[in-house]
Amino acid sequence: MRVPLSWLREYVDVDLSPEELARRPVHMRQPRECVSEVPTYDLRAVVDGAVVAERRVASPGLRADRPLTVEENIRLSPGHHDVTVTFVPADEASDGKRLSFTGRLRFERQRVVLVTYDGSVLVARGERAGAAVAGPARH
Image (cartoon, rainbow, N blue to C red; front, side, top):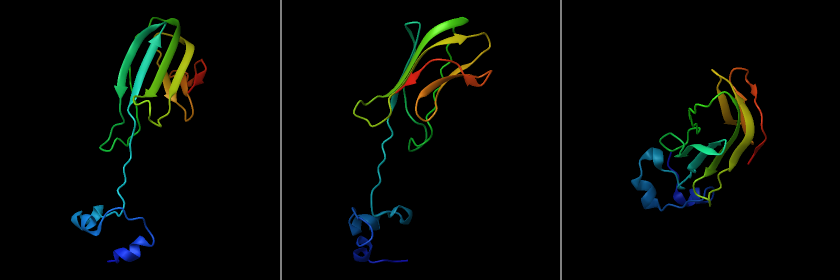
């Protein structure tokens, strides 16, 4: 279907000129250029005052549009440990969420403790029992 650009402007904001639109492949002839920015995050994990993990992470996928997951295997002796995990945008001016978890967690042999985002805060969960382990979370 062909539509005059003058008619299209009545219904849609057109940022590209007719020549720019014509040069694009048919499937890319969108009248507006859409740009999305996905922030890169800095992850930092501290156990009993010692930094045990620190790295920059970005969302996977061609357009960085996949869910962001990070896996860090940290070996700890059994018992209680003070744990702080921070997950903040690498660019401080970014609109990305700033998340942190601070708590005293009990670690046991053959047990996995997962720090995860539940939609509003970071929480710790013990995989074996599937229940919340401990500690307040804040962002």
